[in-house]
Image (cartoon, protein in one colour):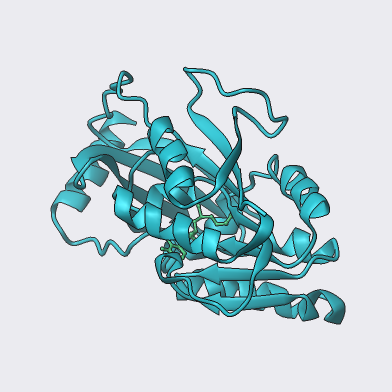
Length: 276
Ligand SMILES: C[S@@+](CC[C@H](N)C(=O)[O-])C[C@H]1O[C@@H](n2cnc3c(N)ncnc32)[C@H](O)[C@@H]1O
């Protein structure tokens, strides 16, 4: 494996390998294959039941959360920046029954510039999407925009990866094999290698390069890559974001069972309400 990852590294360093941003091109195409996380869905359905429609999902991706909500009878708007993710979601939606389709509105746009005529009972920011916003000001724009698009009593739920300054993990020097997936439809094997490097962007962040090595049914291999920068969120910043956006913190939880956050937890579920 060391020799293999060394060779991969040489390919990257040669600059001959095209690196589109994550969630575009190959990153969008394989999203549903690799992103099989479902543990959060019952939690979002519970919040939908508590709050009712309409619901807004920021960074709706390929509909992992949005489609189950619409199938359960809620009216959902999905905002998504990547045209490639959005077109996969549109394709999936076109295969849904008419009543589900009628409950969904899809919009292409940047959540930092959110400006809609509608107000929502619930706004969701699932699966560490906040990490893609770099710097406090961009995050504050999103929290303020979310607050402005909630009805009084409306709720924002964000699933956030936390930054712990005391936790200085050494990034591995070469790509590491982080996933092996068999695509039964195409009879092909997908190996995912992740190469993580610390960067200042302008705050401490990580540069993630994802390498997708596909081996098809004939044994032909192809390599594609995507890259993104992720900036994790200090827990005090989450509190400040809610406060400065005019939202009242409901809870900072360590899991979807709403247990209190502990100091060592790597992720948090943040829930905030717009005052009535
Ligand atoms: C981690 S994925 C989550 C997708 C989906 N919410 C889910 O839970 O499966 C993050 C998504 O947010 C989108 N995204 C990132 N930054 C964005 C922005 N500024 N505005 C809108 N969407 C954005 C990405 O294109 C990607 O589809």
